[in-house]
Length: 285
Ligand code: AMP
Ligand code: MG
Image 1 (cartoon, rainbow, N blue to C red):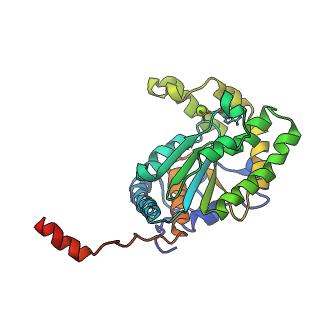
Image 2: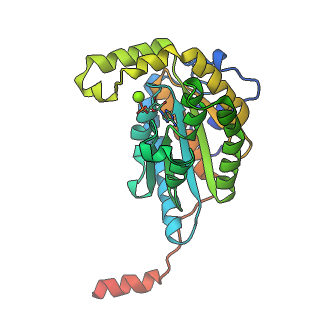
Image 3: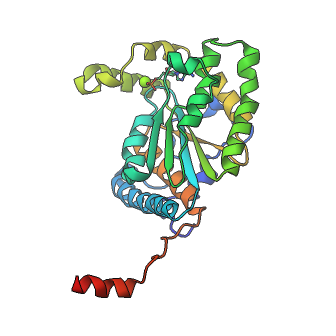
């Protein structure tokens, strides 16, 4: 844990990784697991860690120009207002856009419905050197789809194994998958939705259907439990992130990305030319 800021007691990965038997109903969305600092510590620390992430992310991208084919995929799943957009903007947004691939997944379009549910996902995967971010994902096909009975139970029921096999294939091909389940309490969600209704600059984030989804929370809770129980694998484990405090969830997910990038043991690609000779040439040019 060499460069882990001292305000964490443990690697966030170890604290947040889903543990078999853990219950969604018991998650305290207002908690700050593993973090010993306070909200006041967050802005400076976030800046510093954003820079660390950006450095590693750019190194990954630079390496791909020299033939490194590895990539990272951040999967963000959570109910409305959990803060997925904030992670995209304030965490992933700190990176170099050249190496970032953002994709969001809403209700499937007519064209998407003609294909298998993984079709649109495969098309959006990060390529060599990219950090991909999924704002919702293939997990909607066992969450929204299950809760709303959009396909028969035997169809969504088979998807957990299909998803595991799909993710295994990605990991074997060199993608590190960082899966994050973001949990916001119903109380905090109400506050955030009401803010969206109070501010014209937030209307774009509001959808009347958000209230219908909110009312289905018990069914979603069950569906999330099944996702965590069935698709947390050693090659692509879930992380459970409490999200009532945005400053915490952002710091935590930044660390999860940094940890993932560090396992790649990246370095800047060496010059493919004679640096000294080029300096001399430039001087006289
Ligand atoms: P948002 O992310 O707020 O734009 O909302 C997107 C909506 O699309 C959410 O209500 C999701 O549950 C829904 N959605 C995403 N993927 C699917 C899917 N495969 N089937 C049905 N609904 C989906
Ligand atoms: Mg929404």
